[in-house]
Structure formats: C-alpha cells, structure tokens
Length: 503
Ligand SMILES: Cc1ncc(COP(=O)(O)O)c(C=O)c1O
Image 1 (cartoon, rainbow, N blue to C red):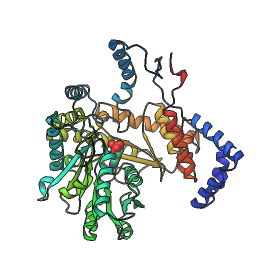
Image 2: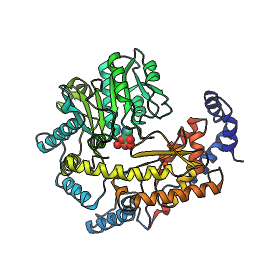
Image 3: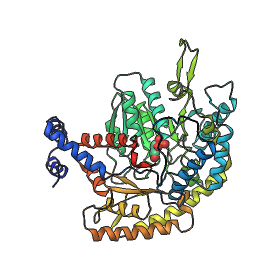
C-alpha cells in the first residue's frame, strides 16, 4: 500500500478540519515531507501532460535569425491539423460550440480584418466602439432587456470568468463594506470563488437540493446584513440544471440585495429554447430582481474564443465596474473591464458571429442541439447502471451506484471522448454542442457509453484505467490542501519544456 492510500484511509476516518490540520503538521516533518514529495511525483506521473504529437523543434530562446514565415505557417498548420480531428468530430464535451469549417473561416476573416484594432484607442478604432456597444445591446435585448423599462447596459469581457469577476467587483464596490458576502448554490461556477479570492468576499455556498437546483429556503437563511449579492445559474456548469431564478431573485429583491444570473452557458440557448416551445423557467431581466447577468458569446454565441457579455440593470452598477485614473503621468485613463488594451478583432468576430446567426440561426442551432441532447439523454437513461442527475436539457450529468463513473469516463476517453469529470457527487457530464448534431454522433456516443459501462462493470468497483484512479482519489482525498498542492504542481508542469519533446 502506498503512502497516499494509507494516509487516505487514516484521514478519511477523521473530520475534514482535523484531517487538514493533521496533514498540515505531518508535512512539516522532513521524512514525511520527502515521502509526500515522492508521492506527488508518482501521482503526477499518472497524469502525463499532453504534448503535440510528432517532432517539433523546441524554442527556449529566440532564434538568432528570423525564421521563414512560410516555414512557421507550415509548422502552425501541422500543429493545428493534428488537433483538429479531436474537436471537429464531435467527441468533446463543450469546448467548441459551433466549429463548422465555413463558420470558422468566416470568424477568422472578421478577426484578420481587425487584428490590429484596440478599443482602448477610441480615436483610432471607432469600429471597436461600435462593435462592443452593439454586441451588448443585442445581448441585452435577447435577455429580457426589451421587456423592461429599465435600461440594461453592459460590457464585453474576455470570457465568462471575467464577466462574473466584473459583476462581483461592481457589487462589492457599490456596497463598500468590510468582508462582503456572496450567497450562492454549491453548483455555481468556480469563477465566483475566483472573484471572492480577488475581491475579499466571504462566500456562502449553500448545498443544492435533491434535484440539483439551488435550495431557495436554505439560501434565504444564508443571507446576512453583509450579503451584497445572491447568485443563481441558468444553467449551472456541473449538472446543467436551471436554478429557481424567479424565487431567488425575488427573495434578493425583497432583501434589498443584488442578484446575478450566471447564464454563461445558457444565455444564447434558453431564449431560443423558449421560442421553440420548451418550458423554460424565467431567468433573465424580465424578472425585476435580476440585477446582473453573464452570457458567453464564445460558447453558444458561436464566436471565437475570448469574449463574453456582462449586463447590468442600470448604469450605476456598471459604473462600479469601471476603472478610471485622473492623475497618472501617462494621461487621463479609463478602462471598462480588467484588461487595458483589448483585442478589437475579437469584438469584430463576436459581432460578425451574432449577425451571421441572427434569430433564425440561433433558433435552428438550438433546435438541433436540443434534439441531439434528447437522443443522448434517452440513451443514458436506458443504461440501467447509470443515473441522470436532475432534469437537464443539454448539459447532461450522470452518475452510477453500480460502476465507478471515473472508470467509465476513462474508458470513454479510450474511445476518443473527452468528457468532464465532476465530484460531490462523483459524476461525468457532456455539454452537447453543434458538433454533436453531426449525423451519427449522438448515436455513437450512446453505443460507446454502453460499451464503456459494460467494461467498467467487468473491471469491478475500483478505477484502474488511465487517470481514473488519480481522479477518484483527488475527488475524495480528505486533505484538500494536498489536492490543491497537486494542482499547483500540475500547472507548473504545463510550463515545463521537456527536452524529449522534439528535435
Ligand atoms: C455556468 C458557467 N459560468 C461561468 C463559466 C466560466 O466561463 P469561462 O470558462 O468562459 O471563463 C462557465 C464555463 O463553462 C460556465 O459553464
């Protein structure tokens, strides 16, 4: 038995806080520390870093002489070609949301035309100003802005995380109190943890109900006089279920606090699903208590990676997001979001994506995605060993009481599927995208899943394939600090250039 499994056994019997303390003290003893280090190395060895296939020259310093552009483009092409098949084929959960060649080429053209644009220089690139204002306006109108007399305003950010971070900054600065609090369901995206970390929030994460939706009563009880914002997701990343936004936002409104709907995943799907006749609980600015939202153009908005929209009910909150400096020797400075210089080209691509889709395009895409998702959901429901979590639409999480679900995920990985592992409870999800609407993909998923489950059953209860044992251990290991340390080392390894990589 190795140190980890021994420690795991001992620590598992202890309350988490004592387990953490014990781990913290033990790692200060040099021989134990050495053992732990060796264990980290062994565990990281079980999760090898993916490197580009084939021989690629490694550059640790600038080449002394400039390289030939044609050769560089050839190298870039070969790197991209080796990766394309994995996402184009529709074997990945989420990741690439549209991905049709003609659409991608169109986005690239929009990007290329504006690749030098920086909206920080409003005088040089008024087109960037136009793109951003119109992206915000179109998104606001789509998310209930046309159905309220309040002004819905916003900004374009670099992604869902930045949209969330910006909204949380706005609430914190508006409240201006020490140790402000966010009340949110346990399923809300980890970007809120990041915002809490950056902005000194205390997070009150409230366990979700048996249906994996936010528990309204428990969240109401978690609100204190320090609460400045309550959060709900439409839908949440792990289980793809929509929180009871109407109840939560009304509760927040009555308590005089803000409410953020995280529609990073659903913002560009739910309005169209509703128009297609699906029963979608209200989640947007049509609800008077919703004071901010996030919706990602780089997911189901079908733009290139690197944009999202954060929206507010009224300019006052948006003002709290801005940064201005009046006395810097570099001149008067203003910036709406985290970044200083921003890629105007990504604004151009997002604007172009929205116009090229239009209402009819989003309706068609949503219809196709929901159809593929229904096939996948029905296929999962037919596998007796599996259990779907909650009542999802197109982000479908499943677990098992009979087979090890991480083993199932690893065996799906062997068949080329890249799925997302979840924990608390141990589960796996697939976020269905337009890639899965290609002929045969949904059926292939179901057939492969049946086979993977049969293999996992035959393998017995313990995970044994690929990184499944590591995943299982990391999901349950009681000393979470040790798992955090493991993740930090994993990131370090991503930055490590290995000589064996190429010529
Ligand atoms: C519900 C939800 N919120 C926020 C995010 C964060 O988005 P990003 O990865 O673009 O920062 C995600 C990402 O999947 C998400 O699903």
